Picture 1 (cartoon, helix red, strand yellow):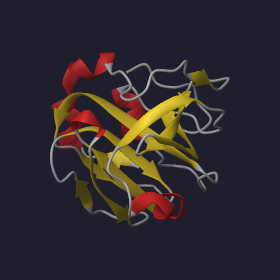
Picture 2: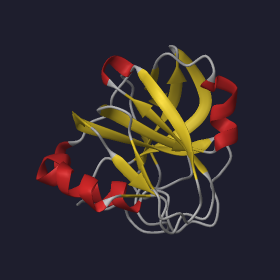
Picture 3: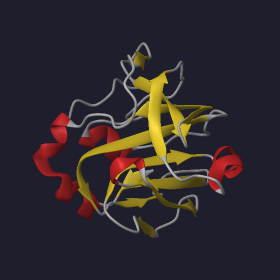
Length: 170
């Protein structure tokens, strides 16, 4: 998934210092340097492991250009500023559920994004975190979610940035 150009411009150079939201924990890293954190819903850790997309380059690349998404994995997009965010599904070959999280870990809603769609998906309000994962991984907790945050380190396979390349520093 790639973020819309308007959202990237809105992030500007301030995105260079993005930090994770949620519970403290030592982030784990893949051999390419991607950090991973567990998805926490209503203060209960789940078995979903999220690759952390901290930089603008990682956020623009998102989950695009991949053949599939490993089971119980996804990507987290933490934002240093609370703003409305826009995402798209250009070059993303599988459906994704996007979860919108506002200040104080408040769950704001979610929606299913269509593969390779030109549609733009905009948060319903300013967010501090967006999470992309498979719809079937979000489904079991969707109806009871009140808060969503990031937990402790986990061992994920996804890399932030284009697949098979070092994570972007931009």
